Length: 322
Image (tube, rainbow, N blue to C red; front, top):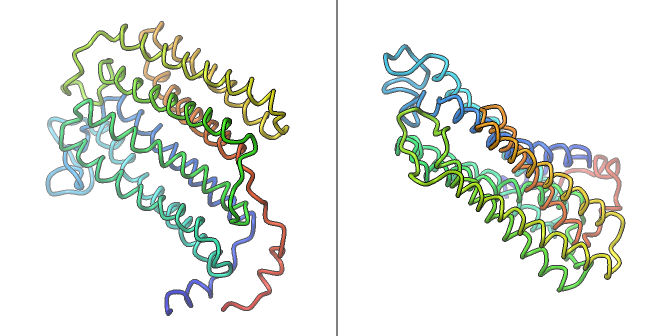
């Protein structure tokens, strides 16, 4: 009760604040993956060779005969960004708690908000294991893949903040939902295949780290084929939406997925053709996050969630705290 009273004394977050906090969560969860790719392509993955310390006996980078100062600071800076992600996750949870204090029926909002700090803790543990395992390719893959559900959940949280918390209804029925489930499953197979290609590629995070002994060309072909499967499912879903009579909002979300997915496929082809240059690797990781965000947005657009209509932000702010 004391904690609930403390939360109730906080100012009620306006719609703009709720939206800003949720957008920050999406950016933070996607951004940490991109900065992680910068660590990998610069060979800075073991710039801080221990965890949670940077080097034995020090949380900060220090002169070390085996690790260049720039690599140390790149890895250390990426670790420090985790603090930003934690702060954003905490803001999401506090904001959701404050909304739920006023509206106890918003249990789904609080549950989604809890996934943000919970996921960050999980990622920190996985990141520590990755460092202690000397960047074994499969640990790096798990570290990246663990961030993908968090990006997805952040998009769902953004939509939940804008809703009234009532049960959702599928706009295109059970068949449309089945198409989306298959689309999501195919998207994650593309992401998994991408991490396998990375495991056999030239950028392991450290020149001495063990790489997957498999032909990169073959793995890249499989990765590309899985992307084609994803696009085929997306096209089939589009035909279904045409027959079902989708809303303009759902069509906009659908077209956005196509634009981003095709751009990501083209970028991947260029990247492979140019010999996997460092800058394009990070752009490709950003592209994968954007595909995930766009697909999650399509999932949300296919569900009818009632928007908040009353009371207004001003009325909330004038209501005495309980």
